[in-house]
Image (cartoon, rainbow, N blue to C red):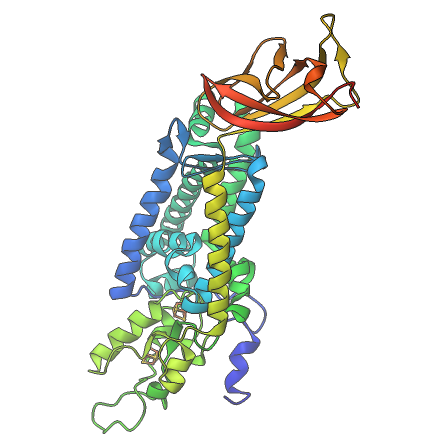
Length: 463
Ligand code: SF4
Ligand code: SF4
């Protein structure tokens, strides 16, 4: 391309020359891919609105409680102490996303990203319903305030606000749990002002994004979108215009023998684009791979009895050289890293215990002599109970045999999903030890079943 043809890269499609926002009135598309995206969005929305209601063993299936740093994935609780598992899970997820993007481009953005699903499949459909198609919306926006305009705008703004409020409630349910959200609703705003304020903020953010900010989220805010330049290569599958087949573009004239390419320059692919770009200029950062232009162009191809797929999922190398999808060296390297991370993650998850115990000898204390000639050491015990039931714990000295545990105060009983602590003495005959600092092994029993083992030290008078 020459410099003039490359000029589209100098500005964002949604910003006018005077720096003002160019509002996109995306034409509603019809076609096979749009239909499939609609089906995917129904399943997606169903899952989004049902998940917070599902419980496993009395706890939510998913919870991202950032405030208490408690996370539940598939009913498994992850505490701050499981942070390394969480970090590995996040790393695995990021590498997976990178690998997926290297091979399949931005399929995620077009098909599964919550922003695209809610914007294109929920809010924009409501907009079409209330304000009509893209042309009718354009007309409505440019006309003065009439009864029709006031009614339509009020209906749209109200619908958008109510929906934003509902989404914000569900968003909170993913953070605090649906039980808590329902409780706050029952007990009212005054009793839970600390929760009501974030709820209002989330509602206003969603409302602002879907009513006004829209595609700017993908263009300006989304870090994933910003990273496309480094993740995509000539073998990545993207929504692409087959310029070899399409150029030289030109209007179709049924009465003359067509000598030009298959692009009839109808501009339909531009009219349906929610980010306001012309895919015929090549892969651009603004393209969220929503496939609207594929459907639009296929409809035009059908009209002119031309083969579908002038715009399609393809890599640059497929179009330029006719190459098939390649498993490049970069893809192989990412796959290897992903396999290693996945292996580590699975091992951590499988070996992760429901009960985690820390026993520490009381700091700054040596041994104490008992009246019967035995000696004792004082210990602190801390126990994390990740299960859904209270755990009555019995601590036993496994090694050396003959030493015993004496709890200070009542026995340790750790409530469900919480941390319990206590203190105890290990009392033993000094003859059991040969050194001043000795290793001992403790075991924790719950209802007669050993659940954890801990190694610690025992100070004795022996040298
Ligand atoms: S160029 Fe096509 S796939 Fe990309 S955002 Fe626009 S309509 Fe969607
Ligand atoms: S929809 Fe297809 S034929 Fe029409 S301008 Fe776009 S690429 Fe060309």
